[in-house]
Image (cartoon, rainbow over all chains, first blue to last red; front, side, top):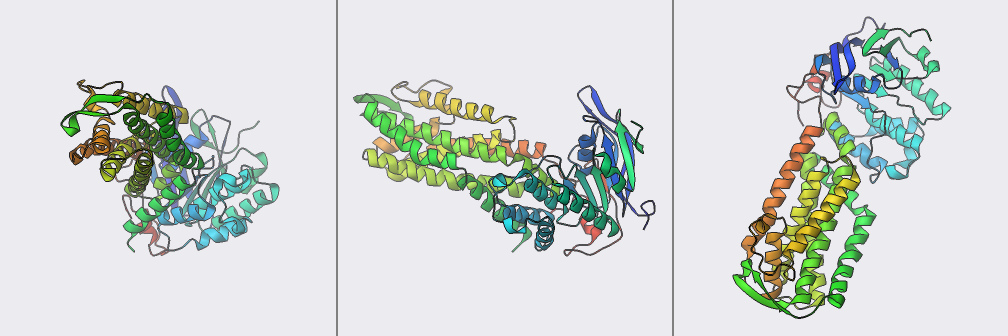
Length: 209
Length: 283
């Protein structure tokens, strides 16, 4: 299925968001369809993370509308874990949150990222890369129709980075919609469409340097 | 097992696990309270002190050293319980926000925290009463434990309230330590033997202190004074719940500006995609 033909999974219309007097998003429009892998790029502080938080509903926009077609898997930029709980305990909490009968998919994903043997290790004792893997798995484990991932591979080694992209493509090919924030030039080739956030407005394509 | 029950028990289990793994709090609980009580026993001036205890119906006479032990034990244990609850609520805040966003009902997460607080408050109350019992003969052990329990609930509630409210750990520690310190000092009969200032009874440790002195030194039943600590507990945990609700978002929240729309049906995990997409759907 071509990305432009799928059902809409996420529609943003004229989304605006300010922090005090600083306008971060100024009328953002975006449609993400089923079976598409969409990149959002922009300079540091351009508002990419704010845009993603608005997409998933963590932030309420000051104006405009966000329409989501179903459940969302959200991987925040910073690892959001409880350092005192083990990997298995995180999986259990999110299993309950997502109302899943078991955490089989999460274990499968952990195995794919090479950390299935660390289930009983506390998050606080994990390396940065492994914490990020768990952070990502918590977003993917319920196989949502829409995935919103904010620089999900920070701290990954090259091999894991490549594995992430293979997984993202596989999810896209299964009909899931994947939105990824990236600032790496060599990632741009992975996307079906790239949108550039500048001055609070999202434009398709990558601007010339 | 119903989803509601699973949500609550999972939250409770992992909240308790996080508390048990908070080594600093455990070390403080095990060593700090007996150390403080012992220091007071060894160092505090020992003479008969006449002071007003309204819960006991008037003036009582007791050793200043022992009254200060009771006061110091209350101070120590409330600082620890307040610290434990604040740390748990503060540290788990980002993950709780993510869990709520993912669909975990707020009320289950908050109920887990509150029940964990009640359990820890009870264990530390009995432990503190036992330490005092080892130090000197108490008139009423269980009523004293009840007094410490209500003080723990009041300060634990303050910790639960401050957790989602404050941005920094240091602010929380400072507020809890200073509040307990000032409160305990004002309830100390050596410092304030008449205890008749109009504002005193509105402080969180007033009623628990009255109940504690009555229990330690008289055979009078003053169980109604437990209500004072319970009121503080109820007010603070309600405020905590409110702050928690304000700081968390769920895309399932009815009336949220973001709306869902139906997708082609696809059954997974017992629910169709439409069911999972329904705005406002709750566990």
